[in-house]
Length: 417
Image (cartoon, rainbow, N blue to C red):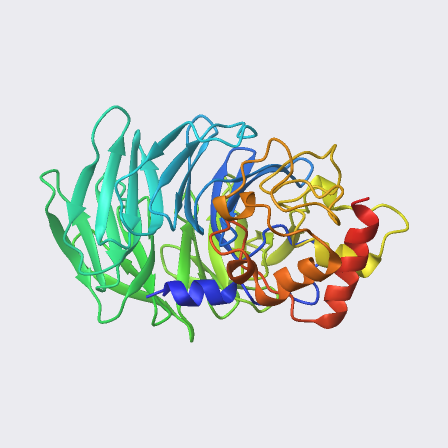
C-alpha cells in the first residue's frame, strides 16, 4: 500500500541535478489527456492545465486541501480531480477562475483513482469504497474491498472494476455486489482496462498481469520495484507500467512482450497516460516534471516547459532562477503576473504574510503575523511550511542545500522589487 507518510516524505526530495524546468512543487501523481489537452496533478495540491502548442502552463489551480491523487478527462475538455481531502472537483475546460463547477463529497478518506465512462464517474478511495457518480443522482456506494481501494476503471463491457490493498480485482454488478475476478497475495496499486475485455493489474510486488473476463490470469512483466501506474493506449496495443524504480516498461499487446524500457532521471514515476495518437506517452514523477515519450521508438521527446513567468530577466541570479523554477507553477514574480495557485511575489521582502489583495489565503496565513524577510523566508524553507505555518495549503517543501538557499534569496531580492 502507498502509505500517506511515504507520499509526504517524498515531497522533501531534492530536485534532480538536471531538473531545469520543474513545474510542480512536488511529485506528479496524476495525468489526464484529451485531444490537444493535458492536465497534471501532484502532491503540491495543484492541478496544472497545459497549452501543448506552447509547452507552457495555461492555468494552475489549487483548491484541494491536500495532495491531488487522481484525474479524469471529461468530454467537454474539463477535468475531474480527486484529492487527499476526500473530495472530487469538476473543472471546466477554462479553469482560470480557480473554482470548480461542482464538488462531489461523500468519501471520508483520500480519493486514489478516477475513471469516466458514458457519463458515469467512478471513484476509488482509501475508505474502502468505490462510488459511481452520475449528474443529478445520488452516488452509488460499492462496498466489499477490505482496506484501501487504489484503482478503478470500466471494463470494455461497461462493468466497473477495482483493485486494492486486499489484493483483489473486483467486477461490480448492478445490484452493488461484486465478483472477485482474481485474487493475489499482495496489494494491487493500478489497473488499466483493455479493449478486448481484459484488465491489466499491477501491485507492490512489481508484477503486471492480464486478467481475462473469465478470471484467467497471465503474467506479462515482473520488475524489481512496485508498479504504481498503468496506462493502455486506445487501441489496446501498448501497455505502460510505471514504478518506483524510476523507469517505465512499455509492453506490446496482446502478447505482453517487453517493447521498450523508458529511463528518465532515476526517480520514482507515479503517473502515466497515453495521448490520443496511441504512441505518445506522458509520464510524471518525483522529479516534479511532466515528460513526453515516443513509446514505440523508446525515445524521450522532452518535458513540457515551466510556467510563463518562470523565465528570468537578464541580470538576475541564474542559480537562484534555477531554484525558483520549483515555485514558478504557483507564484508569479510580478504584480502583472497576478495571483496563481499562490499569491504573486512582487514586493515580497518587507510584506506582511497574508496581505496580497484578491487572494484567498488559508486561515493560518491570513493571520499576518510574519513579515517576509530573507531570514523568515529561509526559516520557512528550512523547517518547512507545515511547521512554520501549520494548516497552510502551501506544498511541503524544504531546501536543505545552503548554496541553493542563498541563491534563491538573492534571486527573490532582485526579481520581486
